[in-house]
Image (cartoon, rainbow, N blue to C red; front, side, top):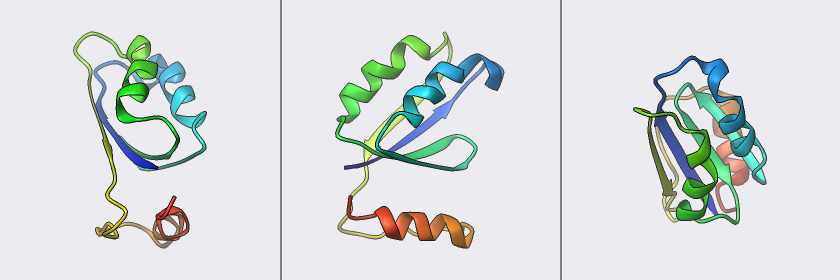
Length: 91
């Protein structure tokens, strides 16, 4: 399944290496936008929130949602981003 993980982190990026490590440990990941990741995983949004919770600091915000793969996303991204999305969209 494809999930989108979006966040508003209050601390410096160096304080979140473990959080980023959990995201990178998923089956596949994409991170072209500074505060959003697309994740291919067998984890549900609830399970991934549980995995990430120990690495979120007070005042941080995070949102995880399943991507509806019946409709291709749209937006303004570089060509290699769209290639990744197109190659992984049905996962």
